Length: 112
Length: 115
Image 1 (cartoon, rainbow over the protein chains, first blue to last red):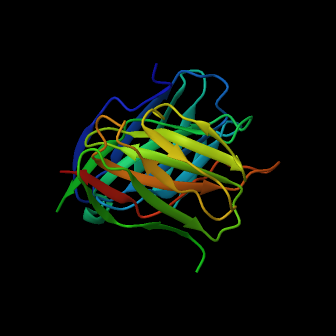
Image 2 (cartoon, chains in turn blue, cyan; image 1 turned 90 degrees about the horizontal axis):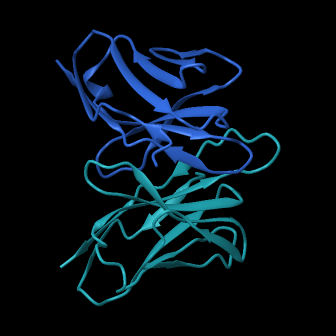
């Protein structure tokens, strides 16, 4: 039973346009959400996070939106750049434990 | 520089052999984790440890073993019982405590190929 799902395995976007990556979760105990970016043959790196007490968090070109009632979050990248091409993982934490649950990832390709 | 070091980066193994992947961190993190990534798949948890001399199985622990004798070190052994060991292995660590955001810090990964 996948508690965190990223239903789009891949996404292709033109440089300069907006990239929207989606993530759904089923466990209502999750209260902290993170996005990681991963290049091939490297470890994932932390990108941005959001607490369940907020509905938006922004960091430069990256914004994460959280809709708790829908159990849905999304990552917006504006404007998209070719260097953003990577696999993006959504993750959730219930803070009662020290465990992240990861989605399956979305491969983003930003075309010049 | 603080971080997580995994070695080796690439490893080849013959069928029937055990191999051990090293993971060392100097971040003073209490918790350490091993994940496996297969092509087109997400990160699946193999084992984790939240304190020295204690560890728990993750979702796919069969065919793997770990030890946590020191806070800094969390080696993973891929045994011959693991049916499909060819994968990319990621070690991670996290600080634990009352202010815990759940942010994992990852190593660069180790790619294991069984010949």
